[in-house]
Length: 405
Image 1 (cartoon, rainbow, N blue to C red):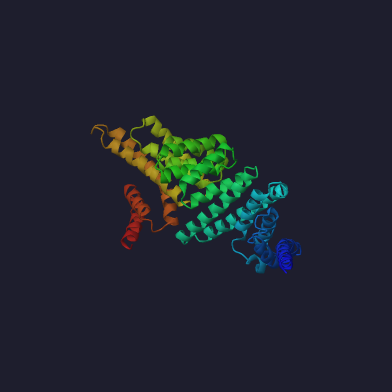
Image 2: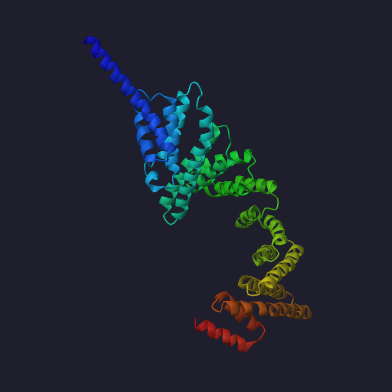
């Protein structure tokens, strides 16, 4: 009886062990036939049973099943496990640890990029959620942080497989910037520069981080210059650098680059307007020599004219052109008023010159008034000019408009 009992126990144990190994086979067959729910059920049992938990095959099959659950277009299968992607990665990692004979090594290496791509896609989906939630900044930052985690996972998996995935690295940096993790963004952007990644926006992004969040204009300018050297003629970097100089009143540096921009975009009125504004600053700078200010005056006139040739209805250029002539006239009048009383002829000549500049200003200021009838600065300038030029009927019209405001 005792021997019989032992024999029965042996049969039961063997049968049960075989049953558990059979779960791995069943999982494989269900998976092969596209029955992911049944495959998942079988492999889940195999991965917790003592007889199969330590088998590399068990975890290799689990990885295959779970990655297909994650990638499935069938919502019934897709929803089998919300964490399927991580479990697939975890399973392949576990299989690699257990696979001392390297039976599945090549297959796992070949499948890891599939997992990495899935993580990248997951990051892209979360990035899109962040972009879609920009009206809710807290939610957007949360989604961007989640996206960073997925992009980092994709990069790490590729790296473990022996590949440097610079695209994942770029999205780590770019999305970290959006999630306000500026240190991570700077670190990854600089790594991309080391890898010679061909994206000009890296340099402007680094520059913006330094100026906006580190209050370091020196470093900010340094990266813009580095980007300009690396990508000469790149318009995105060119305009980012121009704006940097404009915001800091670096007139000479801004003008140099604006002239370059005008050659690249010779039908862009805003560039010529910006050139006019910068020359205007030189005209008004009393620390400059008279020669420099006179040259700047002519350059400003030419720049505004170029802008108006492209777009005659450009209010700012019309107004600034008119104001340029008015200020020139006022400067002449101020000098004339300081002449000795006996310098009658010189006074007359200068007064006529001033009136000529006022006359030149009128077409531009009148056009500006036509474009923006309620602009108070334009109305005030026209009133003053009409008064000085003794155009009293027009002066009365302007007075009436000012009184009715």
